[in-house]
Amino acid sequence: MKRAAAIAFVVLASAACAAAEEPAASADPPREPATVTATAEPTSERSTATPSPTAPPAFTSKVSRVSRDRLPYSWRPGCPVHYRDLRLVTLSYWGFDGKPHTGELVVRKTVTDDIETVFKKLYDRRWPIRQMKLVDAYKADDYDSIDADNTSAFNCRRATGSSNWSNHAYGEAIDVNPLENPYVTASGGTAHRNAKKFTKRPMKGKGVINPGDRVVKTFAQVGWEWGGYWSGAKDYQHFSKGGG
Ligand SMILES: [Zn+2]
Image (cartoon, rainbow, N blue to C red; front, side, top):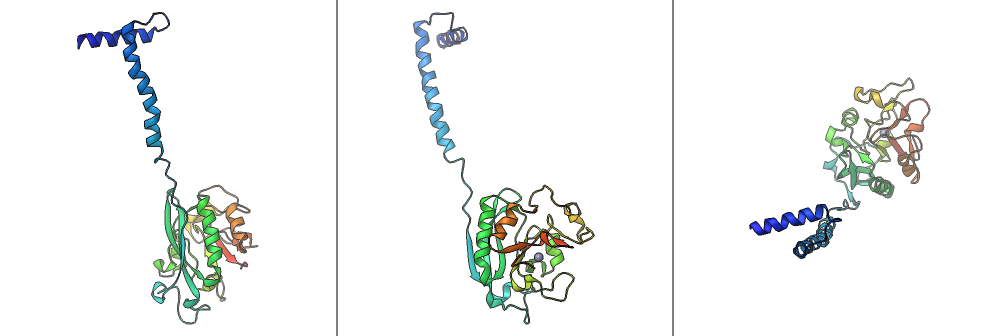
């Protein structure tokens, strides 16, 4: 043991001033393990490096018929589109927490391709969405759904400040991150206190939609127009097929 310690000391010493000393014969054996260690390290790094950069799961989406009992508050007889003509789209979205999640949207059956196309692109770009539940989770109360920053589509309701059906009642509109993208009146106000700091455009921020940005362009590619381009009141959360 003593001798080994002495050799180790010599090795350390010779390593410390390697340039000056002619290496002794006894210094060679310890070098070998050092060389072995040096070659072993990259191997072990590779073996741990291979599984570590795990890619997030690929985007998935599924379109299915929606039963009446999934829409206890958002649909009723007399709505402009029958629930049999609506579809449940279950899809991946990228969360504010930087992780993949699964959300649900109800839209008209004629626009499911549009929705899948848009949300695949947003997911692939890691564009963050707070949450995505059916508005029925808030008893179809638009105010409560917005206050919870919930992204949702179908809701059989009138347009804000109007007696006409909203495009949401046709399943052809969606509100995206409604807290970061509020409905702003012509005078610059919002009904949601927690959204007051998001009334200006353009502005930076997680999940914020700006004029001409990728989100607006992605929806435009499938023919969905942005409420942020309206004159007067602006609806920064709102996209609808063909506008309105
Ligand atoms: Zn809307």
